[in-house]
Amino acid sequence: MSETAPPPEAPVKAPISRLWVYARHHWRLLLIGGILSFAGGLTGLIQPLIAMDVIDTLSSDESLARPLMLLAAVVLVGGALSAFGPYLMQIAGQDVVLTVRKHLIGRLVRLEVSEVDRLKPGDLVSRLSSDTNLLRTVASTTVIGGVTDGFMIIGGIALMAWLDLVLFGTTMAMVVMVTVMMLVIMPRIQNATVDSQKALGDMSSLLERIFSSFRTVKASSAEAHEIARLEGAATVARDRGVTASLWEGLAGVAAWLPINVAFLMVLGVGGARVADGTMDVSTLVGFLLLLFYLMGPVNGLVASLSQLQTGLAAVQRVEDVAVLDAEKPAEATLVPTGSGPARVTFEDVTFRYAEDLPYVHHGVTFTSAGRGLTAFVGPSGAGKTTVFSLIERFYPITGGSVTVDGREVREWPLTELRGMIGYVEQDAPVLDGTLRENLVMAAPDARDEDIETVLKQARLTELVGKLPDGLESAIGYRGTTLSGGERQRVAIARALLRKPRLLLLDEATSQLDATNEAALKQVMLDAAEQTNVLVVAHRLSTVTSADQIVVMDAGKVRAVGTHEELVEIDELYRDLATSQLLAAE
Image 1 (cartoon, rainbow, N blue to C red):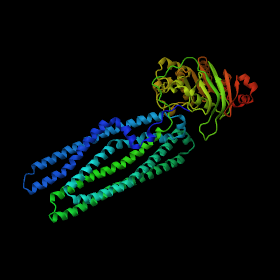
Image 2: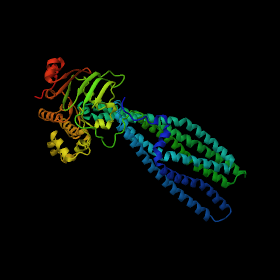
Image 3: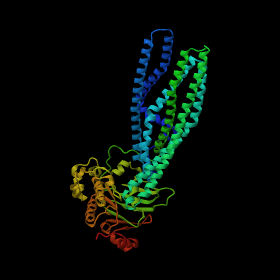
């Protein structure tokens, strides 16, 4: 079993609870903004009552100065509160999104390699960008705005009941109709939003796929094919977005239509009652103003409920990441793990990448100890690169034992284990950024003298001299401004800068010409005098210089020895040495 973080609480909690988990750190700002917005809403409820006072004042021939000044003051104060309150909540909303993104970033970067292998990177990027952005409105104005609108509606209904019970009964019939329609529509909004966001993630994945192999797409004249696939994904995203918009539109109609019908019914019933003298004109006007005012809170509440469904869909997609297997967070500083070369031992190791896939290793056994160079050779698919992945604990072994310095790799804290290892991958990836940033990635505290040393070792001094800004030069997305050999040498220099106790080189010289290959071979031999170096080799010159050669075939170790010994005793190695291994000359 691999060492993973404890299962989060997310799967056993409702999404609305998770939304509060993200928002609770900003509750003060949300509360202040909500109180101000609520106070601004209360001024709206007061205005119809003041309007009634204005009408009564007109009928009594008294001065309108006092009620009009009061009405103006209430309007101004209400406007100020209604503007400042939402502003504070928007600030809190941005803070909530930042909290969610930090949580998600930490989770995504620490995902186990096996999880990233089976997922679509573009979809993960979509969860970090568009899904978290959906939470901003929901976490700020939607929840608090919905609660505020709910209180406004309750307050307005109470005032209506106080003014006239007959008209109140007419209005309540419409409220019940809105409630029933919302209960039917809201779940469909959430489901449609989940589908829409998933479609956007699929489209992002396709675009990421194109850019990650951009030159291959161009060289294959596959632009039209890839454009067609991307346009198809965009069409699906559009269709699902339209479906979500349809349900949101129906929610708006479900709120708007009953309220307007209620307005007409109140006007008719109230007008008749005024005509027969059972109701004052001021009461009818006040009731109509209240009803007119409540259109805003009702529409706001419906919009908040719709946005809440959208936000809960986004929360669910964010929380889906929380159940993925992730490694424990690394400590802030590397812990010293000893000195001298690290000893690596495989004992009857079996491994497969997934339960439904065939085994890659079928009982691999070997030992590499002390200073020296151990080379792994064998046909493609023999499992050579997988050896390095198991040492780095990118994947958990299925059976057997992998130990470093006599300790099972699964028992090592990841920071300590990987802190002693320098690793150069087969494709020698270089990240977007400056040359210095790439070199010091694994050794951020490296001194300039150390950097200068590894530049000389990796034969990069001339390259640095040609770059416009030296080490501070940007080297482009995936190192596109560098040649394949230069990228490989940068990766080797990065590994050497770490001063590793164990150096893993996966076909580190495969993209180098004969001159640079000979130079890098000398670098490996120099490093082997100080540490334990393991290399997957395809060049005969590298293999013949090794202190130990491990011959692998079909996931097994079939022979271990020096070049001279293996030529004598192993037919496969003899064949590889004479036909498949690349000679330096």
